Length: 311
View 1: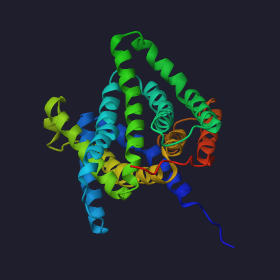
View 2 (view 1 turned 90 degrees about the vertical axis):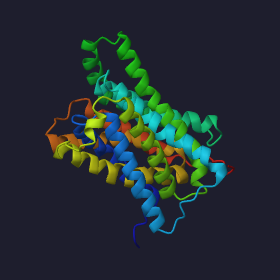
View 3 (view 1 turned 180 degrees about the horizontal axis):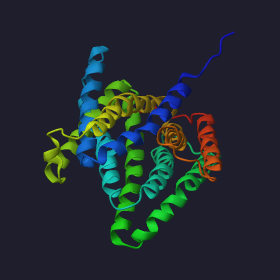
View 4 (view 1 turned 45 degrees about the vertical axis):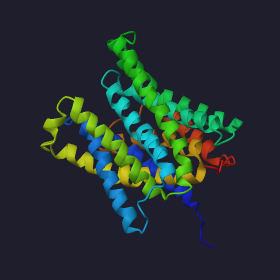
């Protein structure tokens, strides 16, 4: 008798693996390319490819008039208003602090908006899962965040504004994810992913060209092989595959369960750091990994809570 594996669980595992590795591409890119320009070109390119694939698969790239506003709102929330503040805020706070804020708040924001908008019903297991995951993230990134924040002075205005910007990214992403779910009941994930990345990326790209220092000069493309490799990885894997997987999971298992990727992706990042950069595992890393995986397991094991089917 063959082993039967839940296809959604495979999607979730692949999403965690891909998005756990994207930090390498981001790190390689933003060291040489203005970050908003880098993100905007990534999403626009991914959007064009996704829409071309949707057309090739026979999916009509046609949006009903009554859904256009929702598509625009989702595009701005999940792409423009998420990645814009996230990259901007990371200029003023440490990477450790950004990781704690973004990864810990994303599952909380997803659950909050899913319950607020009536897409899911809250259960005790939700809080247990989030508590375990957040505790693991705090153990993994907390000491680094405190150490890196101390010299900058967390009381400074720029530090506070940067931290707020990164935190806001989690909530705009969470709200956008829940608002997107009704679209996924009507349109294929490929199409939803393509439209939102193209529109949201286009807004980022336009903003970068208008206001970001060095963006116009970056149009020449002299980024260096490391930045280009990172950009290609983010386009093909982070957006083309990863974002589509997330949309499919969002449709099939709901926002709060899909968002538990935030508890597994750091584990992948830790493993890749050891394998690729020869980083060492610190004493707190092991219990942190166990807590995050336990939180993800609790979230994924939670039965779907009768999502609304109305539009």
